[in-house]
Length: 452
Image 1 (cartoon, rainbow, N blue to C red):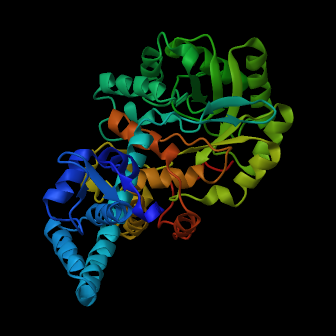
Image 2: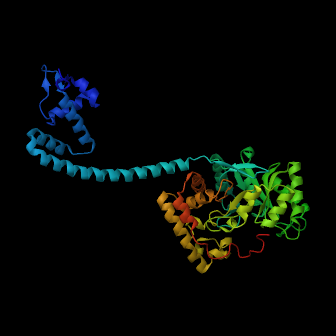
Image 3: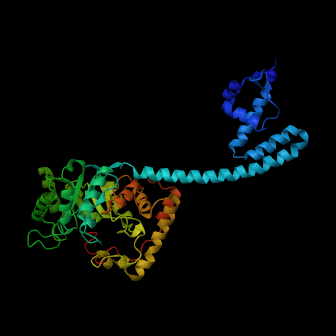
């Protein structure tokens, strides 16, 4: 017997084709076979190799969603012989066009599914860690949490401490470790809030706070004071408010032109040797100041405003800190909320919101700067992400020594921000964002305390 004459039982055909015996019997009852199936008895079918080849072809047609009526039509044409070849060809060509269109729809659907999977993965993403500082290293989550707006300066500050504490707890759960505050925020109340929130979880986090903008040697009024005496008075107050015996990262908030940086850093080095602080940093310091400070004791981190909204650090500061092995902590990485796309008018801000007096939010400047958000939003649309996530992902792509500290007092915004750690921008998207023009207006109404 030649292979062409081989006869197969229904169970053997089912095994070869992957179909059930029920489906094979259906093909026969529905009139889809080329010829009646040979029967060796009243109950035992015997399929030929030609039958099996035809069944496999029918199954492939059905898998491409060819309606059963057209499958039957094709079978009828095939049974009638060679004269129907043009009709069979036309039927298959029409169906092929439909299949190609279906494939295009499926590709679009697959892309939508991939986007949704990506969103779920971002939401459940566990934060990556980086190291700030080479000579005095400190490991932190790649995105921190800025706590200032929970208590000061922004709309709604201080109105719902319970929500703020829930946000801090959720941040820890998501792998955020760096929590940023300062004695001037409130003043004092933001440190107290963070201390309450971290009770029982102190070992899970890195606390960063700041000194130098309150004069503890006199009446406690606002003003720059980088003197060694004020450094010690400041840290003792912060330790008490935070409810801890040490501060992981202690920044000089603004440089005091009346006190040599060497004196201030000398006092900070003493606090490190005593175990009251683990590391120190500078905020909004000039390049020469950073070099002088680093020569006295290694600086672990520089905190300065940096975002798609403020790219001044790229000129001198970023090259310098990388030369010296200093980590970089961008504050206001979302442009004081502007890069979220949510702020379109000053009417959205409380009367006491400090952004009402910020030059970039003023009048015509605000209208001109909206173009930046629109460009960020265009990239966000491509990625099924939010403008905030895109702005943070761009910042994270600028180097593995950068740990931005976006601020929020809401759990949903926190989760949105943390998801940016899993968002990957293409080279084209990075280039598009990097080409965005600078905003209109200065970063502050008074720029004199900066870059000293």
